[in-house]
Length: 67
Image 1 (tube, rainbow, N blue to C red):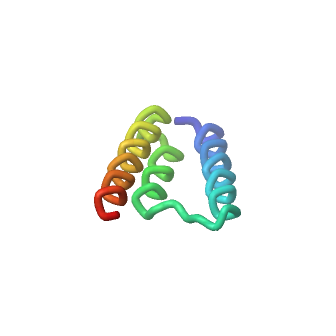
Image 2 (cartoon, helix red, strand yellow):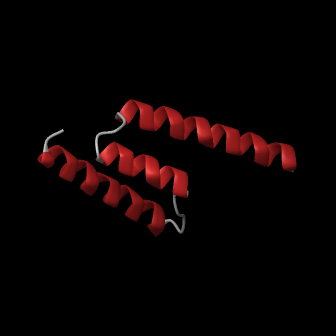
């Protein structure tokens, strides 16, 4: 992956995390690692999205069951 692509991805991730923090939230450590893997070109945007959505669905199921 070209350095410019990696830098653009890193800027995008920083902006996204900033938006999440502005809402008073924080991405999980797992999500932060996946975001870094995306920035470094280790995973695609599609893979990042798929795994993150899957994790959120599982988390919501656990919360619903616990209630």
